[in-house]
Length: 359
Ligand SMILES: [Zn+2]
Ligand SMILES: [Zn+2]
Image (cartoon, rainbow, N blue to C red; front, top):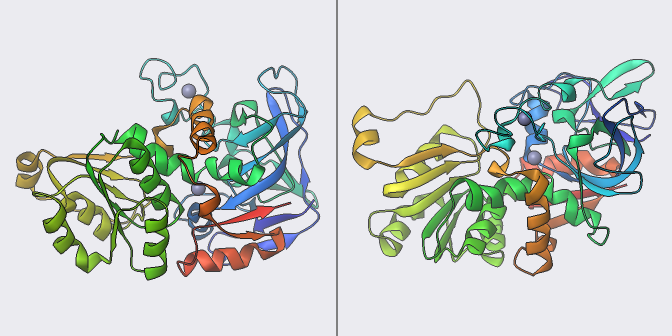
């Protein structure tokens, strides 16, 4: 099968191959024929090692397709079902999945069953990135990672929900729980930032300010729900004009100490700064000991949009069907697997929102 493989952590290109074999599904597993997969910024982070990933690995983690085989004991999906792949699915039984109602924080599958090789190439075991490995014509996963959807949803639309859209919209509606009439600022207008802007719009925010270095991205943000857009050095003036003392909510979708700190500074006393970007474990952000007490801000991380994929994927599809979530507008390039390195280069250059690969 055709696939895009990361040979070694630190490589800046993926190897496009046609001789990958996907393992048959074992008990509790399914094989999914991948129809479409988005190219997400976290794929770059997996390549660089910022997100730990054993190699060789089939990259890709934002995908949708059709169940082509099921292992023993699988009852949640059947052959022929259309599914979105969840890269961190809930096991359904641990303390996060039950007592604390945080199924997105369940690690039983993502750091357990999913961390095994899923493919082989000339007898060598090959992993799937983040337990998914969607840059291949098919992948084998724990059945919990295949979330059934209606047959009438186009696969390229469904694929986006597998990561970026759930992460960004979920940050606004689940993690921060943006209230109607509030003011919001979003740092970083890639796929996740644009999804957070749409989430804030859906939640009824009155002002949504998009912040990015690139004019083109600011234009895209305005087209998809932002009410204002500016460069980082223009934000203070806009904050003074639009708010009294700061925004109610800030979302950071970059993962850098400077923008994480800027998100904290942008919100008013009592406001919420929500960090969605994936930063490096080697970098630190500092706060002085007085401001934390005095400003009484809520500073929180957001993992996979604090979503319960079992119900939230369907909710996002309903918002899309109702015309409230623009997913077509987020696809800036449609490509084949052979062009994935171009899509990765675009993303490094800050070009476009989402490239989607169709097989
Ligand atoms: Zn669990
Ligand atoms: Zn992603």
